[in-house]
Image 1 (cartoon, helix red, strand yellow):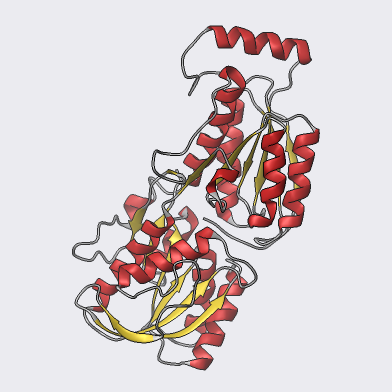
Image 2 (tube, helix red, strand yellow):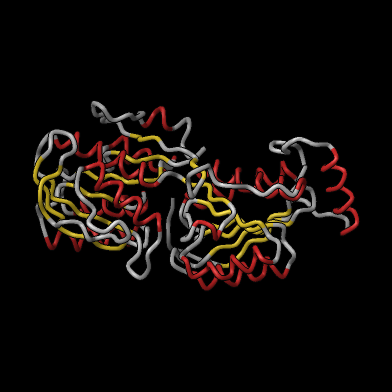
Length: 369
């Protein structure tokens, strides 16, 4: 995933410009006559204008995604405009950026949406003939996008939860849940939260909302044991948000020993708060798998992190629109799914029996690929 905070605005990166509309049409017709899927072909999207709209520009996750998209756009001959919201919940900027892409006559939009308030604008884009590719965050409903390339966020959260339950070895779990947003519901926030609870063996209560689970009871993961949800706060997926939320949670319950964080920036903020409080007996789990976060994993400040593949998401998004520009073929989700799964692996230097994982050293070779 997935992150938050920082400056917004747009960056225009023109990687290939067509000489003119006639040249574009001629090139596309010639390429169409060549046949084949077009995936991985050199410059087969030549002249196609594509808007990449990210959540924001400060989280390393989105920076990595931008870098991969630019590299693939150069390979495929796509003219890429990159923009983002000012923060993880800034839908107003994203709506304006979608409108600009429609007005510019873009072939498609690749977007990590900040909320379902952008749905109407994306529907207008599709009505105008643009292909809409969602990255990381599936829209509600999924049909708003032609395809979503994303982590199975429930699976990622479940890996964290299974690992945590196994590590506890039947001990009591006094849990702080550090979620993303407090002002709107997005699929990533719910799926990760609920995945963690499922992995721990805690009922979620309401499948459509965070925070509806029983606040205490018995978890059934690992050897099983008693649990309490001591605190549940939003972090906006940022380091400052994670640190502030963790400080507040510790003030409410000094016995917290388990922390679930929506992403690594929030987890790193929580780790800072725990270090300042002299707490070395708390285990933190997160989702992202960023290369820059691996030192936190190797030191144990973050016990485990479910790694994602934002580079693959971005590459697949650019490829999908380049192929559409060449052949008119629109991308689709995997059969029976509302997204296209780009995979996840658990990174930890404290492996637990029955929970598949790789070490931080092995992760350094694949992180954010």
